[in-house]
Image (cartoon, rainbow, N blue to C red; front, side, top):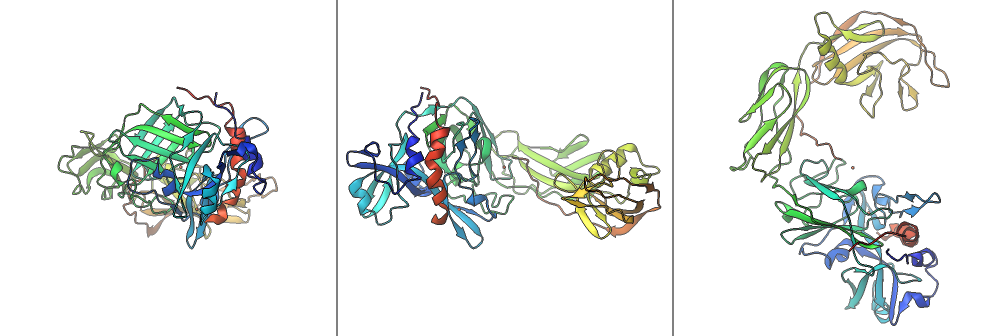
Length: 500
């Protein structure tokens, strides 16, 4: 078992002003924590001449989440922030994660020579893992991490995807180190080039790791992906993934994850009419040796740059074109098939199949409802929206809420305007309801049938790039991780086994 020596951090980081004890010094060497920029943290770890950048983030607070995790009183690990163990600086458009706060070993005389001590905070005991520091011309240089008890061998597996919203490639690793914060990840390839990963942009929860190589420029939150360090990863094969924690190295080896060459982030597909027909897509960027195979759904066929279909319902569709030779990444594009027919009508408190429409037509309309306007207020549908019309039964939910707000206030009649993806016309109707609003949220109502009509306004649906389902920053932010660094190590890293 790996010796649990992280008690050093519990007292030392909190009582950083206290003098070093005998346990914290080894001859002329002393131990503490430093704010280490990513470029310096990874410099001695990688075979890669391109430095690792800081991480820019336009999100409001994720880059601030540098609190470290700890073991709770119930014996369960409590995760730290999404950027646990890092230090940061606020910028005009958000923040920037600069690097990690990590244990170091340094000569006493060298520490005195440092012009910038990089937030050095003394520890009371020698850490299990640390970065050795030398000083050249008054500046710190960081060596390869020293793992006193040897690297932990992980038993797990890794999968590779080149169709992800979060970059050009994503790894999903099972069997990651447990009960600890991850300070860094090193991805190693068969070809000999290594890549250092950073919090937030690259390292996510539950073993998800992603990065951009310059093809995809932004991730879903609008953050620009930094790609210089990772450009050369295209076409390489991953053989090993190493996680860096306060306990040292934990490595998953014996992998064989090919990173297919990427030539485009998405492809443009024309929209079309539902029923029977065809649409075309732009395949001009495909490499000459790309052996294309296209797929959409049942009833669709792909030949050349044409997608043909029979009896296709209105709605959004995704075309995926893959390389049968496996050399290049697959690529996706989305398109919409539309109709000017509305297959539902309002009847007795719900939307049902209109005269001449099938139950299949009505069901497709219900599942494609994208928004409902009640009176003059529009509510988005979907997982994060308000459920005003049940997508399976068509029932008008008079007890619907948007956050804490009641959609129907019990005032009487309501005009509803329904938008559905693939349906060019909105559907308008009125309901009469005496919705009783109570403090418990229970609502009762009497419903009356009313006349219905199709709105004359139409909504154009533009072609959009397809999204793949993925998935999931100075110094002013350093105080918290410095203080809690050891506390995390004390509780999180105890009793973990190291395997040969």
